[in-house]
Length: 381
Image (cartoon, rainbow, N blue to C red):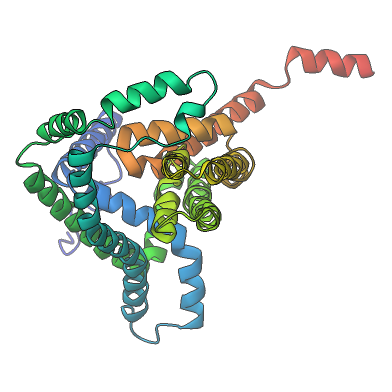
């Protein structure tokens, strides 16, 4: 008797069917339990992982071109590190600029609030001349906003609602955001370095779980990320640049920071009108009615063209999504996940629409032609 070999060799693949099904159920239960446990452990860092994945998908074509131009030649860290540092600088520099501008203008804001407390808000000279509503609005303004005592009481009630520990809470939130940002960049570094191998494993997993349709669903989700980044971020920044020229021509003070703020809020749907309407109100209060009307009208024109013609083509066309589902994905994702939902919403919608098309087309193919199609073929004969 040969005892050198494995006594169980040749019997491992011969298992009763009930034991095989029990093992399959056990594997599914174990994988589900471990997956839920991992999500619970990492739930505080899931936003960082999601942001890193979105950035990696959006920047992957440019990174691959850079990798072909500068091959690693034995190391795999310098190019990913340089790309990550560049992304960090692109994201940090505008925030630092805005913070410095806010700190620079904080003294002027404090002085302005002090003047409002002592002198009230002066009424524009053109306000009583408005047809129909000018006199009652001017009377209300004079009684409430121009009166120093009333304005002092109003500002006192406003600042009374600000809790004493708000500065500490804001500081803690800023520290938390910085930690999330740091882990986002760290994750992005490893995604740049090992992205190709990770993509291959994910494709293998999707093929095993979903079959041939898994890769198509993944491609639609990636296209949704590219379209969303282009349609939201780049179009929003372009809106800020165009409306910023209107700010400069209208003579708005601090036109460049205000244009940068407009570009940031323009990333959010319906966010740009808040910025340029505020600029219009400032110009209106300063007595420049024509410039105020011009800024608001030009802003609505830019937003109308961007939201109705440019963004639907960039976002929906890339992932083959109808405009309604693009809008619902963006707004629903924003409400559910905050700023991160702007990008996750269209991705989820793209996956759902892709699965819907795959399953409905497969069902149609399996069921054969419909009775209406058969009748049309008979009529043609």
